[in-house]
Amino acid sequence: MTGTRLEIDLNALRHNYAYMRSKIARGVKMMGVVKAFGYGSEAVAVALELETLGIDYFAVAYAPEGVVLRDAGVQTPILVLHPQPDNFEAIVSHHLEPSLYSHRVLSIFSEFIKEKKLSNYPVHLKFNTGLNRLGFLASDIEVVLDRFRESALLKVQSIFSHLVASEDLTEKDFTRQQISDFKLLSKQFISGLGYVPFLHETNTSGVINYPEAHFDCVRVGIGLYGYGNTPEETNNLQPVARLKSVISQLHHLESGESVGYNRAFVAEGNIVTATLPIGHADGISRALGNSVGCVTISGKTAPIIGNVCMDMLMVDVTGIECQEGSEVEFFGTSSNAETFAQKTNSISYEVLTSIGQRIRRYVIEL
Ligand SMILES: *Cc1c(COP(=O)(O)O)cnc(C)c1O
Figure 1: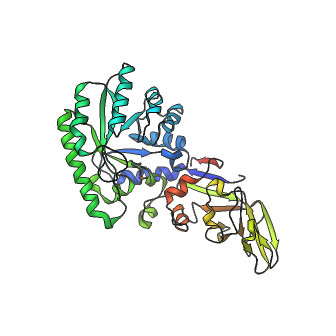
Figure 2: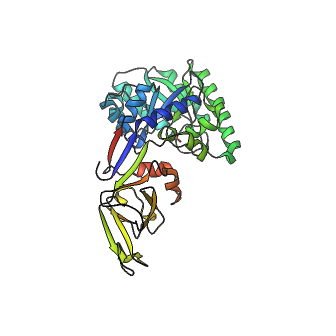
Figure 3: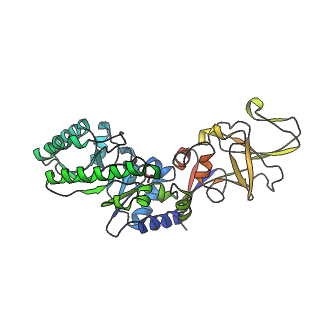
């Protein structure tokens, strides 16, 4: 093992899958969210493993992410959450299922299917119940229904919405309103449609906090990767990604010597520093410099000193048993991506998805 690497632990993934399954009733589908390279991990390895475990559906944000999965042999249905008309060709040729969220996208996609002389193409209808990001409003239902009554070009596979604050229990009233609005609008839509698509509204935190919102399917992202949005739930899960590096070089400095660009760190005594082959180009934010962030070496904490460089950063290893070549951990076992994120007012989602593509992924099967 050499250099900086992201270990992807499929055993942790299996554990998290089983844990999230244990939270939902038998018969409720699970959609594995594998957008953004599988939350920065390795989308193909994660998706193939989840497929083996029996996941019912996948979701990606953009069509090219679904194309990668199909090219790797993934057979399970894939919902594209935010398709763009430019991607419709790729969507249809790779049997991806678009979320239709606006009159414009619905109309362009219908035309596209017509031109291709296809029919009953599976699509998913997104309703906006308060996030105000994507989706039709309840007041659009009749106009949307007309489109589906007009022709059999499209088949509504599911109707869905997205919770605004499922992890925030101070927003319970708002969330409950979203759940009841979704119930109402889906009922109205189904009665006009004449057949019954499956319904889904929750992400990971909704699975945990709102059993009444599981409907027919839940969309699980962060939970599968080992984070539950509370310390208690995160404890029940296991981090899939472990970010590790290695000491490239040690430096013995005397008091008054500085480290890194612009001399941002100046030694106050004799110290030992280690240079690591990972920088802000790899997703280690510059905001973690100057002792905000730290790493673990031989079980001890070493602060990041000075400014984080593009390709490297330096840590203070004074008093820590280590050598050039020693292993360093950013997060994964000794700390997790959530605590790492808190140092810069970030969240696990951002830390995980920021890990650059320059860092090699090592998939660990056992
Ligand atoms: C990303 C995403 C999810 C997954 O959310 P987690 O909190 O990671 O479980 C679910 N639904 C939609 C619409 C998303 O964009």
